[in-house]
Length: 444
Image (cartoon, rainbow, N blue to C red; front, side):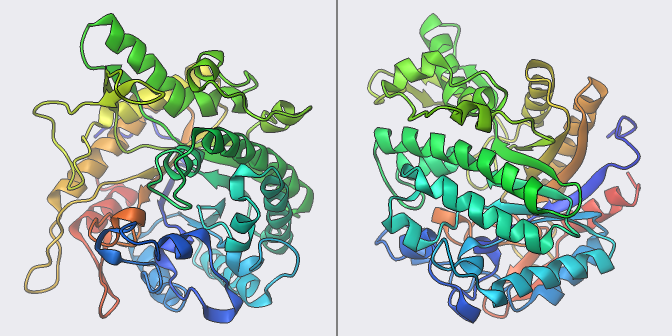
């Protein structure tokens, strides 16, 4: 693993999100989000799990801070829960919620750990969903209002902000496939939600810059995947182009001033609800782009699949995670280099990279997760190789600090560098966490 290409001030971090870790869903004025509602939908979540307790990090933040210190990370990416700040999605503020994140920021700075704040990691207040959610344009306006509130409170100390995490999941998986909250299966809703998410990003970026006292750096986080044809058949090549449009270009193009890809508008058969100046707002210059990477996509044409006409196919003989996701570090290198070259991105961060494996503690409670340790080494190495080819990557954030609630998969997938025994909430750093700490110390 040659890391000589990484800049001297390269950030080493970990990522979490509020709903996956905080628990305390009814504490101190917080009101329900769409994920609280979705968890009550029969058969929506494996094992009938909910985020009601999660890792209880709302109450156990000092323990998580201790983990960060032990790992030696230089930055911590976490999300603010909108329902804790504005329980009804707009209007009245909840002082206890603002105080909570105020303490987190102060504690991180005291520990010389740079806070990296995500404003939206999928926990839309339920009250806004009842008014249409992201399908409604008004939600983008409410998001900007909320972003301004948080920036006004934390922006004297927080410099780095991401607006929305993985709008692909919020639009396509949540509104087209129905596997995430709010669980819709409607192409019209999905396309409209996709536009309002991007519009919300642009409006929130303006709000952060207007309200933060420091000079904020504002970006968005996309989950990107290389999309490759399964065979040399021209039909598979066309399918891979559609997969790329759906997964990557639909988000990258408007963010970089190119508008929505015309080929994908034709595929969907639905025009995004663009109003005057929307595309200009969406394409306001990014200070950085966050890239989440988990797997590549290899696809085959399949006319039986509605709208998109393709299906993912496994790579025979490939190493996979416990979730069946291919382990392919070259894909991270490829997306970083592509974004740097095709979109001239000024600064990139790997904002999430991680893997779920079958973690079983030994008699002493230690988890020897050699596969995850190798995964980290290989993906950090892929990041360094992308930097060597000109991608301006400024940091790597492992997903995740702790095992947590993994959305519709429930609690069985474990991504953490620290093992969580959910009944006792005891945290134990895994072998992979020890390896990551050694890499951060330069022992590689």
